[in-house]
Every structure is written in structure tokens, then in C-alpha cells.
Amino acid sequence: MLRIKRYISDHNIDICRIHLAFGIIFTALISVPVVYTHHSMEPRWGKLLYQIFNRLMDEYVGISNKCAKALDSYTMRNINTIQNAVSEDKFIAKVNSKDTIYYNGIILILASSLFTRPLAFVKI
Image (cartoon, rainbow, N blue to C red; front, side, top):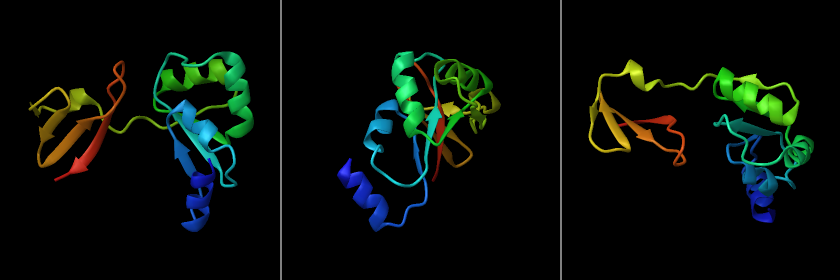
């Protein structure tokens, strides 16, 4: 927690975005706004813990309408929605492995937990 606080201070960071719930705990001591991005429709923690998170979070973001609605039901807070940037069905691509898709000079990396498969762009 202290290392994160020091890093944010040393690098003049204005906002911290996290996407794992345990990251909320690691940012408890920082003074910049913290935004939690929710990527799941299932709660990973109990409602009591989400009430504690509410005291630490400045904003919540769901990556889809369903994720935002689910997060709203755990937190009872207004949830911002920013649609996930990539939809697998929009690409006709060569799948080289279970984790990598190649498409027109862009590598789509499937970086996620075992239960979800959000995509991230890495340009080659």
C-alpha cells in the first residue's frame, strides 16, 4: 500500500484505475481518485465488502450494460458504463492459439480470468 502511494506521488499520477477487487484494498491510502472497472456479472465478494469498497471508490465502471447492472446490485451505487472496445464476432481472424488472435496486423490478446474472455489490442 505504501509503495503504491509513493509511486503515485513520485510520478504525479492523477487517477488510478483498477479492475480487480483486491486492488481496492491496495489503493486505500492513496489521495488521487480511484476508479474500479468491473468485468464480471457475478459478485466475487459479499455485499458487506462492497459497502466497504463504496467508501474507498470514487467511481465504478461496468464494461457492458449487464456488468454495470450487476455491479449496481452489489454496490447500490450509480454505475458508469463504458462498452468493451472489442467484440470477437466482428473479426474474421486466424486463431493461432487459445489466447491469441491475429487480424490485419493487430494481435488480440485474450487476457482474463478462467471464466471471462475480454480482449485487449496490441499493435504489431
